Image (cartoon, rainbow, N blue to C red):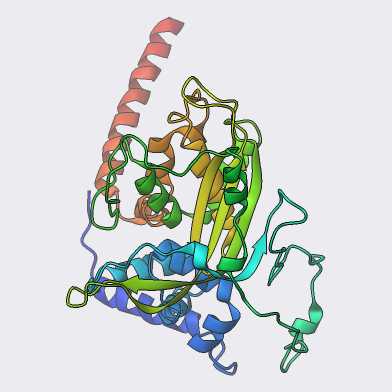
Length: 366
C-alpha cells in the first residue's frame, strides 16, 4: 500500500537544485553560452528542431543546455513550449525546387547535371580522433574557399531526369489522399493513415528508431532495394498569404535537408516496371535522418504498390505508433513512478500461487 512520506516537496526542491548544480558543473570552467551551442553544436540543434517540430535555433539551444545535452529530453522541452505558442498563420508549402543549395550529392549519376556539391560532411573524414581540438584556444581552421550557393533553377533534379523518360512513378495524388494534409500536432493519429500523415510522423520520429528500421529493410526485412537518388541541403523561402493582401509574401528562410530515394519496382497489374520513390525531409542538416525516413516511407508504401506485407517496417500502425521518442520515453520512464499498490497486489498473487504450487508438489510426493 502507499505510505505517507514527510518532506516530499522539500526533497523535490532539493532534487531540482542538485540538477541545476550538475548542469552547471565546475564553476571554475566558463559556462556554455547559447550562442556556443547554436553555432558549434549545429547538428544537435538541427535534430532537436526537427523532432521538436519547431524551427528556432535559439530555443533549441536553450533546450539542449537545460537538458544537459540529453537530446530526447531537449526535444520534449521544445515540444512542450511549442504547445504554448499561438498559430498566427499557415505557411505555403516550401518549394525545394528553388532551394539555394549548399550540399547536393547523388549516388545514381557520376556526371550529374549541375554537378555534385560536397558541402560540409563527415563522409570523407578518416574517423580519427583530432586531438588538436582538445588544445586550449581557438581551433578554427584557415578559412576555406566557398563557392557561390547554387540556385536550383540551374540544377535539375535526378527524379525529374528519370521522369522525362517515364522511368520513375509520377508524383500525383492517390486514392485516399486528402485535399489538405492533416496536422498530427492538433489531431490524433488514426489508421489507416495517408502518406502526408505518415511523413509528418516520420519527420518527428526518433532518428535512431528510424535508422534501425531503415537498416532492417536493407537486410531483407522488406522489399527495399534503394539508391540515393539525390540528397540536397540548403535554404528555402517560407511564404504566407495574409488575408488582407491575398498573395504570398516571403517571411524568411529556413535550412532543410531533402532526400529522394529511388527503389526498384517490378511493376503490377496497374503499373509498368519503373522506379518508385521514398521521401525524407528534415530541418537543418540531417541527412542520416532524411535518408532513414525516405527508406521507411518507401517501405510503408508496400500495400499501396501491391506488395506483400512481411516486415515490421511495412506495418504503418507498428512504425508510426512507436516512432515518437517523446511518447516512448514517457511510457518507459513512467515505470520510475510509484507502483506500490500494483506491486503489492502482484506479491499477494505470486505468494498464493507459490503456496498452491508447494501444496501440489507435496501431494504428488505422497
